[in-house]
Amino acid sequence: MRVKEFYGAIVGDIVGSIYEFANIKTKDFPMFQRQSFATDDSIMTLAILQALVDMVRCNKFDSATDDEWRELFKQSMQDVGRPYPLCGYGNRFRKWMYSDDPQPYNSCGNGSAMRVSPVAWFARSLEECERLACLTAEPSHNHPDGIAGAQATAGAVYLALHGATKDEIKAYVEKYYKISFTLDEIRPDYVFDHFAATCAGTVPYAVEAFLESTDFEDCIRNTISIGGDSDTLAAISGAIAEAFYGVPTKYRGAVVGRLEPSLRSILTQLPVVDWMPDIPQDGLTPQEAAAFLRTHDNFLILTHIRPDGDTLGCAAALCRVLRGLGKTAAILPNDRTSAGYARYMTGLWAEDGYEPDTVVTVDLSAPSMFTDNAEPYRDRVDLAIDHHIDGGLFGPRRCVYPERAACGEIVYEIAVALGQLTPEVALPLYVAVATDTGCFAFSNTTEETHRVAAELIATGIDYRGANKRHFRTKSKRRIAMEGELLSGLDFFNDDHVVFLTISRSMIDRLHLDEDDLDNVAALGSQIEGVDCAITLRQQENGEDWKVSVRTTEWLNAAELCKVFAGGGHAEAAGCILHGMTLDGVKMAMSCAVCQIRELNRHKA
Ligand SMILES: [Mn+2]
Image 1 (cartoon, rainbow, N blue to C red):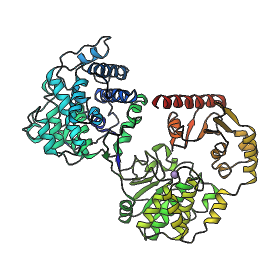
Image 2 (spheres, rainbow, N blue to C red):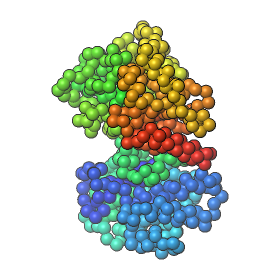
Image 3 (cartoon, helix red, strand yellow):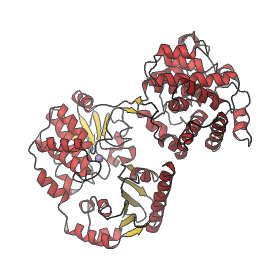
Image 4 (cartoon, rainbow, N blue to C red):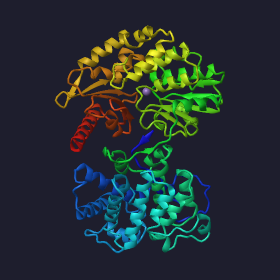
């Protein structure tokens, strides 16, 4: 898979953060520790990124003058950086940061090199890259060496992004700095002194750490192993290594979790810039995942909290595939499994005391989606199979295809690769695919979805029975509940937004269970003219609310739910709001809807 995103400089900075003043001269250390944090290198990199994004958004990227660029870079560094006085600014830069009229101070410090990497992603030629690099340096680091450090770094990232070899990258950097040493030669004597804080004392060393590396992680380890200004060195080498190798997706979660929301959003809300290059992203194909499964044994399969047909269907199918191969496999019990889906799980739940060797998650997108009893396995997931965009970042191996309508489509490919597409496997997979697509009616449904369904049906399963059971049958209680919900609709925003409320008293009075409440959210989205249907379900404590959102294309449901630490897909997502009254929840949700709508208008 190839993606347009960059985390490399920030990964390097965070890994290096705890070694800057406690150098280690070894490559053997944990990449992320609890104390690892994003320092000024990350924050200034994000500030430069924000400025570039702003220029694109206001359509001035091509027409802005040098003065306008310098002014914007300066402004962006102050805007983004001022809330973080303790992130590690040097003395003179701190004065600059909090000055009302900041002036360049002829610095040749490495600050100009550590923050520059985003320009390489936006530049369309090496010349443009060098010009922009110079303009990011000049507001503070206007010494010729400060500018050279920024240009050498940005140029190296640019070349790596555009397919240059290590020899070509080295030759380019040597226009600025001679690199006539190896890491082993300089390691004993390289310390964090005055020289190591300048561009000349940093950039060539970071570049050499990249040149000697075998992959992204090896580059970061090389960099930390020489000592010096570790976080800045690694921010530089990490940016180059990312452009050259790509960053393992497992590090994205570690970065995102260490950035405050406002900083995080600079990274995650990149505008579409078609000229921006993309980089390879790791991840297993279904065939590679199949190969992994074939060579392992004693499996435990994890499903997500509030399990749906997709996660349960995938688990049941995968468990049967593995048992079909003669392996030991079981599914961790999920006590919220509804009666309608329990029929597919018979005989597959793990018994108490089962000790697995291999842990696999299905349709489980984030750490917050683990069930309570899955706690002991949180840090030992071996393979994550998922179709959520940020899915499976907690695992070392991911088989993630966000373009797939259901995780069931991916497990189908795996079952085929392992020669195990039996009717017993196909039926739960059909349920997985059918339920996650609203019986092939949601907009996530593709030709591929239908092709997979056709292959599943061809095994001879009773798909008509499954469809009747899951889509055309309602309990009396469900019908009564729908009657009450529909008589209590609450419209907002010129009838574009509708709230449906399932109160605790309704659940108790009508004796509603999980089956009765399954997919209630779809009800509101059936109303003509409604673009956003929000179903609120009061939790047992009375003051927490489970929110399910269904939207049309004008509003991204996942973006909306992310505001409240939830997630999901573009047109179906969820979150939980804590400690609120019904009116409070409605207020919070409708405000967020309006804000996102405004933001999108602004973008457009
Ligand atoms: Mn799913």
